[in-house]
Image 1: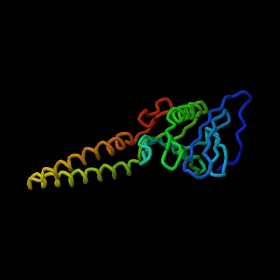
Image 2: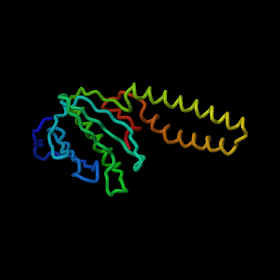
Image 3: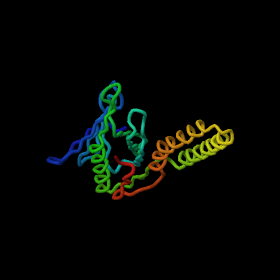
Image 4: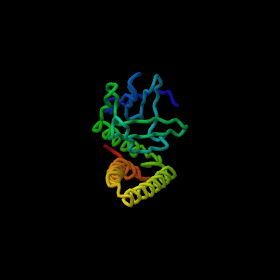
Length: 198
């Protein structure tokens, strides 16, 4: 990864974003200036010119402590990679959303890359192979649940059938949103997919 420091043009506004990826360690810090995108992660720092960013992948990545979390994976032309999350650890039991700041930072990053004439690959959601695998697994689970429901009804186990229906509804609500938001797509700088931003 490049180690050069960003030197913004005099008077140029900079945009900053920071989050804590874990309870221990310093916050991950990012800054957008006219010169490029600067970052400070786990004792390392550097700067990437906007034209040197090779790819951005936006995705929806909920976790148990934060069901509304978004992620951006940014790749440099030399193979370096950084991740930016929309949530920050506050305490051992609290992960706080930073929706507005994350959204503003992502929009500004895309705008500055477009102004720099970037030809980065802009993608959203899961990779096509991962998405296909997830759909196949969900189809398999749906067939299994349908089989269990038919068997429960045939045996007049109505309590068991109700449990299966309830579990299926909860599963569809939880996993359905993840699958819907993470459908693979390619996008342009002026059409950032809203479903992949908070």
